[in-house]
Image (cartoon, rainbow over all chains, first blue to last red):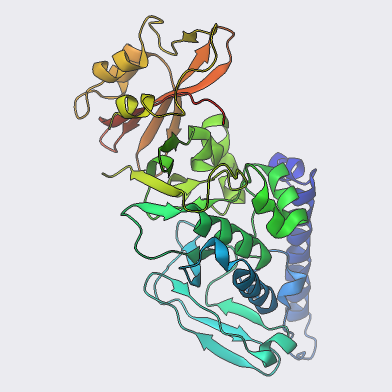
Length: 281
Length: 107
């Protein structure tokens, strides 16, 4: 193994990812051996996503729990509905013709994906009972998932803080975050705390703007504050080696659109507008 | 886009740390962030030109070809004061725009 994985394996999240790698390598070797030894063909085996700590598919149960949390905390974004969103994770990810299915032991049904790669989920008791998986037609690590909660009618190039607070909570509850960020310690806390992580003063929950960012400002009545640069680009301004760590971040191909917010700072009310200035304007 | 005039007028952007003076982050330590804004010309100043005028920066280079250069303000105690001067270069290598982030009083 190279030095980087050894270093990465020393911390909690790194050990989780290293175990995933070990499982993958072990599985690959077993399959290769079975194919070459001349043994009688074996029945196919479905590998449960639960044995893979970083699968491309997500747990249907967890996503439904996220939907339930959305209903409980809807007051954060009273005018918004809940969507989930698929985003590219690798440079060569093809985001066209994406199909998503919910697959259980006996139940399976398609999920309609909009042109902007958002989708909603419906409750299906059978799928819940069978602990179904939400499976896109893409290989592991090729996409990242987020929630998308938008109050309609906002000014152009803005988001609403309450919507984003709820996005974080639902995203954490639904188990959408599957990679480490450059701030390993923060992610460890995220794994432990779940949705309450979003109530911290400065959680490192990565949001992605629609286009590459140059400035993000928070505006609430007469109060306006521009975010410091270390709140953009996954903290790249403070990490000279950030490019080496990008493969471990689900922001790998979205770095210039990435920002974090002081979600737990209640001096900013839910109606605070997050205003974006883009690089290309 | 230069934000200095608008932001410095905001109620949370007043300097609240009396007795601490800001130290300019540029090669010329007499140059203020406002001076830097005037010295860097969008569409005309390129990377070598910016470096010659302002000095070395923290550079963030994106795969798109855009680059963000960061100059951080400091107090005389060599601590960051939160103010920033940023330069955006487009893929052609010329300055597209700049901006200033002032320091804010904690609420």
